[in-house]
Length: 399
Ligand SMILES: [Fe+2]
Ligand SMILES: [Fe+2]
Ligand SMILES: [Fe+2]
Ligand SMILES: [Fe+2]
Image (cartoon, rainbow, N blue to C red):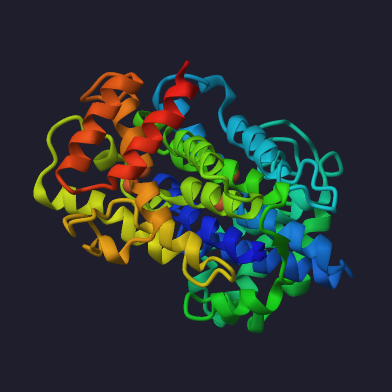
């Protein structure tokens, strides 16, 4: 089965935009505008589909390591690294997607400046072309808010780019951007048109469901999500691992196993859109805050819409807080509306949350965790047969 990888990356980029918006004030669709601009520049240079797709993906994911960088900064570590850390980790993450095009340094150097004043002190000509293109698009979009620039301000904007060439922008990047930044391009970047523009600008990229790329992407996404909050550093990764173990226990073939693994890694992607101060609030949440927390599942559901080949994965990912008796959220589905893997995902999510260390409870061992799960199964919340299977399959793995 094939998955539209470009659509999946786009969904992740939407989540990243929200994080960048929360932390750095970037606006909605920022990643998409970067993808469109870099793809337009690349196309004009005569790049083929494969290279365009790699470049646009890197543009969409340029700040994929932002959650990790901000968290380490908040915790008082890595302060000397400044911006460097999110560049280094971001590059490492994106390289797991195994592009055919050489993307070395594209994300690593996206904050370099032509005069060498960037985080790594590289001057124009010393960092790769992909980083130059992503860098100029990023900076121009953040400083000029391209989604709102009217055609009347275009000459000023172009002048501004020219003025900073050789200091901030490399001559290569400035020339490339000025060649594509006309009135028509500007209009196509507005919030109402950007999704359409992007569909036309970026070649589709499909990959086989059980390819290594998909599994790597799953690891990549859970990493981003888990670093949103220090309380959940291993949550999505732990759930993916357990989904893999349970899928194997049930004898799933590699494709089904990959689907389950991907659903597990994505289940809390909606949390990227939940404000960090609510995720990390040490005191009891009030009703409104609790409603916002619960809303993460609906956001997961929305973010995973429109990805070709993704229907089941979306279902399993967004049913993880549903209960057999209909007392769960966000849809209040009942047992007969919950397929086996949705039930499994709910059990695994509870197992992981109960066993991992949280501010309000310590780490728990397998026995203690299972007691809580059996209790919930007894109350008709979760599937008892699955709970028994987990008792067997996960016990072995703990030792
Ligand atoms: Fe960045
Ligand atoms: Fe950015
Ligand atoms: Fe959740
Ligand atoms: Fe979760």
